[in-house]
Length: 116
Image (cartoon, rainbow, N blue to C red; front, side):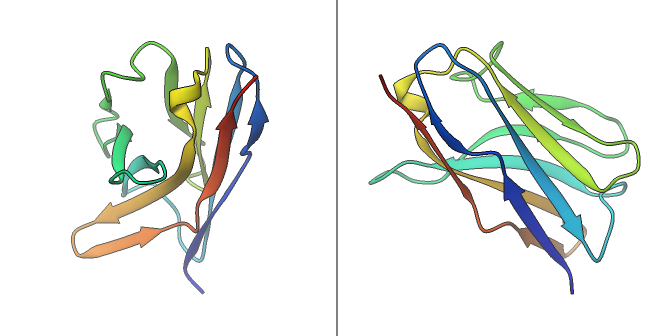
């Protein structure tokens, strides 16, 4: 069965860090473009980070640039989103997305809550 499973979300204080993981099951990421999205209550889903294959080019939303880092394992099984200097406005459900040609997969999401 092909699926993506996110983990690593939780409750953190402002200024803290979390690392989200996105594990692939039934396929490997190597040829896929990877993206992390988030959706806060009452807001549209927005892309926060992307990693293109095979170039390895990465890009970030302005709101997270310099604080978040997207990466992937060399074996192509897991992607990560390292989130540092978290702010209350980073509170959202975070989703990973893997896409190549007409194949697109989404994870179920993991909640990140930043509050004091």
